[in-house]
Image (cartoon, rainbow, N blue to C red; front, side):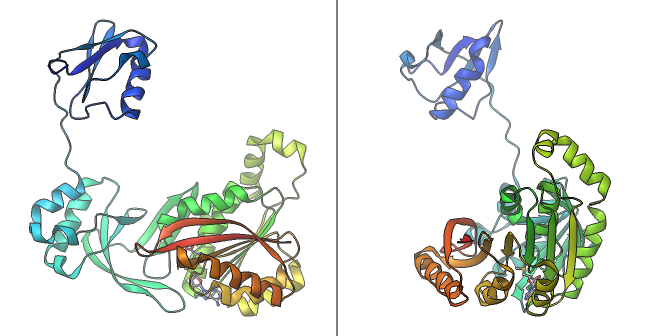
Length: 370
Ligand SMILES: C[S@@+](CC[C@H](N)C(=O)[O-])C[C@H]1O[C@@H](n2cnc3c(N)ncnc32)[C@H](O)[C@@H]1O
């Protein structure tokens, strides 16, 4: 086999063979495949048993062209920082619209502007780079940011899951890394559900659910006045008008025809403390089918107030940070807290949806009032 570095088959079988090579780690990714009349030759790493393939192919020798590898953000940064500091470089960053947020370790501060410029050059979407300064602080979980490079602009025009979110990055808590988690929740929402979002920020859960589910009522509560301001701006930005709703239902007509939607969709943003707003909501809205509590660390301190508007069948999504070895304790704690208020629960799912540190995960506990 030493002379053979490729495998040849008819173009007809190209996709199948390529998948087989990839799945079995046999494709040599350093080289480009070659076409020859009606055949294709893929570069391979080693010989293997052809009996596993149920179409004609043969090993061949080929002079493959090497792939030109574009240097990544990380490759370029590693060229400008001392090699002994390379382990301090964190290539992960958040993106809020055209703004990238990086984390810079103190040893890399002398190189931070250069690092930020490299990031802008390596990603066409990024126009501004800021770095995190300190941790999320205070009741409103606000993060401070320091400008590093590009256009000085703190107004994020972020898009995710068909939702537009505008906000000033220094005004409120937001994490783009949770967009999949928000979509997961929206996918769980059933037709005509009433949903309560506690600690709603500028509305990422509110509008992800409004635009990606058939909820009938979505009520959000947020205490930070600046986040409330942006949540209302985002209500307009997302055009949850009757025309939009009609269009959405028409797209899913078969669904709409089968079960009656109790429209129109009702979206309400409340600015204030959940402890003050929820008792008022109880008078107007009674109970909710789903309650979302995205306030890790202390969400369970608010279970008593959330349970005021819960009933048998209400599904909760409560977020927390924890070492997974603590999971059984937190499950027991939630069960106990609900029991004190007269509710039995069934924990349906624990979703790991992020990382606070290598050992501490962000989790969502999905539990049902039974
Ligand atoms: C971790 S952030 C989540 C924001 C948003 N749901 C998101 O995912 O981007 C928690 C939010 O809860 C708000 N908050 C904290 N205590 C609150 C309270 N007692 N009542 C209402 N909102 C509160 C904070 O201002 C903050 O915006």
